[in-house]
Amino acid sequence: MPVGAIVGIIVGVVLAIIFGGGYNRLVQLRNQTKNAWSQIDVQLKRRYDLIPNLVETVKGYTKHERETLEAVTKARNIAQQLSSAGAAERAKVEGELTSALGRLLAVVEKYPDLKANQNYLVLQEELSSTENRISFARQYYNDSVLKYNNSTQTIPYNAVARAFGFKSGEFFEVTAAGEREAPKVSFN
Image: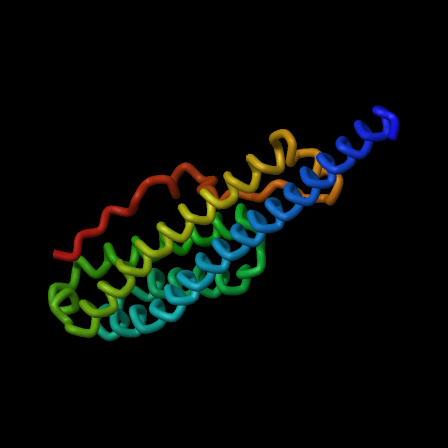
């Protein structure tokens, strides 16, 4: 067999290994990113389920805070309706919900009896725990997107990504400057 044919076969095998391995790697990373996004959804669903109970508990004590309660409920409903939106749009509405919750929790400070209510304390602890879980899920998602994007944009996988239509992932980022600041909340 001529040397040129052997070299051609070797190059073909190497390219097949790179493309096959690269394709599999990109599929794994894309699926990891989708899984990470699903984990955010799970935690956001938990948050959405807690909010009506929190609002009802607060409503019993705060007859004059209707506007704040309605803002939280409206933000929750909008966030739920956009559950299939992209990361940027979801980050925006989730930031608005977080802001509304911060205002609600600030209202609670005016009502010492409410702060001592056992139902409120349990809901507050659940919400706090859920917010931490959301934060960790967002971090994991963004880490997964980073790995996926690095693979789709670096050699040799970038050629595979282009050939098979792998697109870069979208980070879950805070876009508004006010959303970058943590709400000032005290539960004592």
